[in-house]
Every structure is written in structure tokens, then in C-alpha cells.
Length: 100
Image 1 (cartoon, helix red, strand yellow):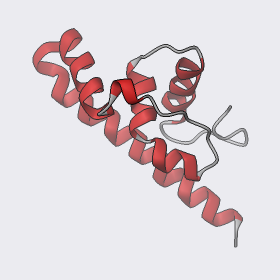
Image 2 (cartoon, one colour):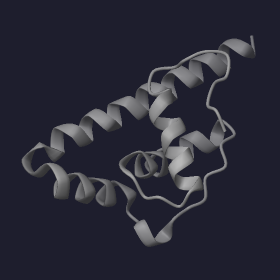
Image 3 (tube, helix red, strand yellow):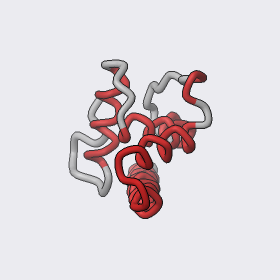
Image 4 (cartoon, helix red, strand yellow):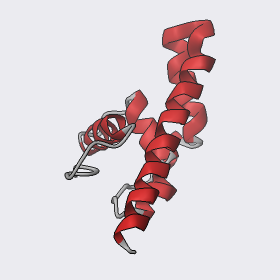
């Protein structure tokens, strides 16, 4: 499912990649990020199945980043979280504008 066929929202690329990865049952950084944001993304109409085996998703993402990036994991994690929040806010604004 493409997040916004009319245009490009900030962070849309990571949402689309995360959704694609989850559809292929691949647990990537972006897939975990989508799982972290899944309650909010579901409100936009995305169908995202929970993965109880990976709970808490935040820890799973941080552990994955830490294995790969060591001490740089924290800043990369925060950057990813900021991007998914940015996407969510932009999507909310877009949806709000359509209902006016």
C-alpha cells in the first residue's frame, strides 16, 4: 500500500519500505519503525498486524541498531523516531485538510 499516491510526505519512503518489509515478513529497521508507529498508522487506514514475538518494538529496533552501529545507535534511533513522527504529523495535516 502506498502511503500517499498524490504526493510525497516527509518520511513516506521509510513507511512504504517498512510496510513492504513487513509484507515479506522481513524484520528490518523500517519494519520495526512501522510497528512502533502502528497504532497511529492504523488510524490512517493501514493494516498492520501485531508481532508479539518482537515486543517491545522500541527495544527490538534499538537492539538491532546497537548490534550494527554500536555507540551510534542512540542518535540513529532518535533520527528514525523523528522521521516517523514527522510523517504521522504531515499525514494528519493532509487528512485534516481533506475533511474541510
